Image 1 (cartoon, rainbow over the protein chains, first blue to last red):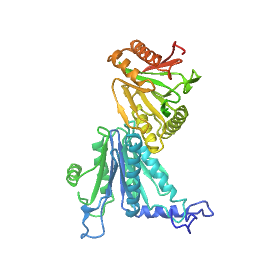
Image 2: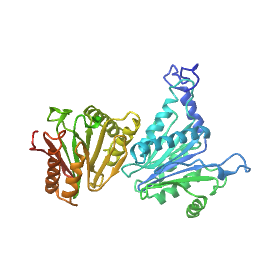
Image 3: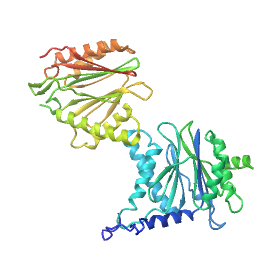
Length: 237
Length: 203
């Protein structure tokens, strides 16, 4: 990776034992728009705020929630272009897996390989860490719903519910109060929308948020259409 | 002289009612000379069996490669490889050597995650065929196809499957100079594997 003149890593230890590039990458994530996810007992929901800088922006043409393979999807907070590189790599690795084994790559394996890629960029020559934290939603090989967070360092965590990006502390507190182990997917979607609304600047509509869902029943990840989002918004008001 | 016929082998796999059976001869030869009579060509991977007929060095190498891949898979994925996945993996491994192939013609037999029988056979460059009755491989395939076609019935119970598989294999290898000299049979059911050595003509 990188020019042959750059055979040394740019991410180096400080005296106190920190990797400052990773800390700074986490700052970039904390400045990004909020994303959150909730793992219900029969599925997973991920959602994000899609507000962009001006009313002239054509919001339907860009989507933050992306399907990676049949059973998994990503959303992020942080730098969009870095995210798109990870989405490409994750999709390719899922297809390679399928070519080898004729089975869909389970979400837990997808997370491990994506995290491994992100870690490589903290220890290779001439590159910088990815400025994104990913939230990965999927149904695993044993049919259990899973929600993972993957950080710029390559560390990954499995969550029942979590939030990343701007305002994540308030969002996580809100989620902690509302989360229940036996929550169903429909309740989780409502809770996700309520949580998103908490920190939202201005009015939250079907066009300025995105929601992605995977249910245990069919194991397929899909991004909701604006009309479907509107139905859920109507139910929550 | 064909490379696939240098060492000699005979393998049959068959499905039964909620079980599969796989049998192989145990001869290892160097053309006409018999070198060993306990060279097994069938290897177990949890609830799946892989039978490898062909050049003995490649039989051993592929067994080692499959063990390597199966172990890594189980460590990473924390689950067992189903026979279908194993079969596809084997097919991929063979095609990777498309222009300098392993000289083996494998069969895969096992019970899948729902304990349903699974069979597949493939050629030396990995072209798979999936059947629900029987697959054969080795130097006596003509004989084995004839025996299986005649003796096979659907939904045989464990004991009957064992008899059928044994008789089909024994009769086939007796008319083939390069295979025989002992035989092993394995029957896989959801409760476990039953393995037996057959009393065969040692010639």
